[in-house]
Length: 427
Image (cartoon, rainbow, N blue to C red; front, top):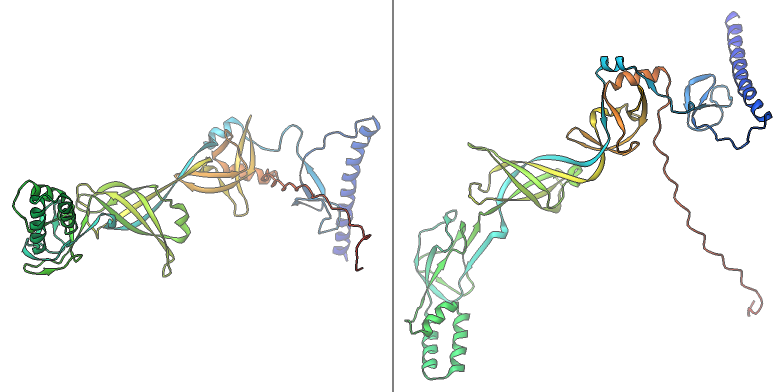
């Protein structure tokens, strides 16, 4: 019985306390109205509304308390400034508190992956026979050998060249210039170069042997060359891939693929007896997604003028992604409670204001601030945990994120007046 009586007395005391606070609020504002104070006085900014029965329970809008169905009371900002944590200079030095500025800058993110060196397919050259004949002589080469540019790989004997050259000489000596030019055109179609045709016009002996030369320095990928072998026009004889540049193939997880851009720089480390570090760039992001591990294949290009890098080698790739200008703050200034992300804004005079922020990407010890701060603001870099404890003990309100700007309503289209019913037939 005594417990019930005590509970009733507690409720009555709480109700009377809330009523007294409301009466006190009304009594302090009534004299101002009676003295002729302007009714349009600037309203104080409301930080939040709270339950008078449970002051620790805050709300973002007015209404009724869920406990006793009482009106929620507003908590106003203090005159002149927002409530903040007060720390003396001696306390700041004891805590080792440091400040940093919010600045504009570029945020570079790093994405590390393992890549495999591969041939640059854009340096692939194909050797084909331009006329029928047979291989009279072949230099001993097999697939995988290194070749120099212009190196002779085989000698092709073309009997069709003999008859065509004899015909051109006979027509030229007979004075039939037009027919001689037509014969020279035929020689070009059979694969004879302009220099060879000019030597023929200068009275040089008829040539029927064609040296097949490597078009570039590189690796012989295939060599279908055998002495005595008969070849036909258009037949592929060899394939040579250059090594002046190489590709690096790597796989990037789908969630991180948005950080990669074509043309961006990359740092490449090649493991070996003498580790080397080189630079390259992103050449292409292949469109096909690997369904097994949900990765995208990224192709990089790197110069290899010394030909020390060979296809099949492994390399460590560091992809560097740099966006445009952003507001940046040292990551040590950001406190993430799980529900809100906070920083403490230094206001001078030992005042520190808890501010809610929205954070974007983070890299190299810097975090991108999307909302909540401005360039030039001073924020606390160390000692925030004590400030956060003091703010919670003093029940300080956190400055929230700015409210989203409502979309402007477009001007309503003028309504057309209703058409008159008069004159309508068939009604």
